[in-house]
Length: 501
Image (tube, rainbow, N blue to C red; front, side):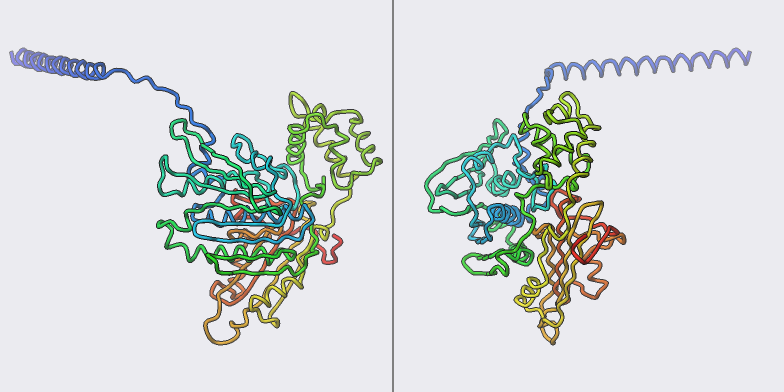
């Protein structure tokens, strides 16, 4: 009897449980129907693939930081460096001792040189943001810059920094040369999401050289007022650094009408490897040589192998050209066919490079050019250095078969030898006659110490009144970032002090 009662009670509990489960299921189904009804009444979203021009990469702060390798508070320094590099290269290619005048007036930075002047065709080419144009981008050579996008990044900077934003924001850049003024107004079409570049031309009194005026709202912006003093100090130090590592440069800098720097060339006949000189096959590895070949094919589709190899240093002699052509079997071959029309032929590329390197002489480090002890001594004297503390060292050598020249100079400011308010440490660093916005020598030699760390070990920290200069000339420099702010200098290569290695 008790067992029957227990069985009946169990059946009732199971029945109640099934009833509750059914009720919850019914309620859940009703809730789902109501939810579907709400979304159905709201309609269905059809996603549209929006197209945004890649050219807009130049029109945002984030992308310009990526392009230049420097944050927006340093863009004034980027403008100074890029335009001064270009001016120096232009003068050197023309065989002219460079004279550069730099002015900062209100929200404008103006840089003028005494070169041949930028042709109108080149200026119009800058306005085409769909391509990158550079005469050095694929070359391996001890030149100052090779990215090919300097002016393309400078034109939109004022727009990006314009506090008005929106449709009213714009920047203006003026380029004057050959008695023509080219006015470039950069803004953005926010409907089409693409750059909007206005261009006009009118007469100009500038007949010799090039004068470029760039609008930089940073200089008068309320957002950056607290940075102006530091920015001015860094700007003047960077400008001064060009005079330290370019003996042939005459440089004058004014800031809102006041002359801040005025340097005369110490050697107007200073000789260094020119950007217009032939490149050396010994400076290439296979990957760089492949890129160099591809660049020639892209721009000179009909070039022959003979014409291509004749442009390397040491390969102008007919006998040497013939030897390379016989070894590679390319006497009547176009470079395009030898490279590979459907697919690059790595064996052919490596064979041609090895053959040219075999028959062309290596470039001695001394031919790259050295700044020299006398120039550094005169610069330190003008900066207030005590002549008795001056020290200079220079090393010629090779690293991985590539020549280099390293020069360093050191001195103590005269005021630092007496009690009082002595100036702080001055560091000048440069690679291929172009100073760094930031000290690029983050790792020196096998120990991996930075230049700052080495100076600190020598008790020459930032509060000490010392002057230190370090310059590297080398045709193949590998920077660790796009802003050229970090470089690794490898030690352990063959070195000699006689200038013949």
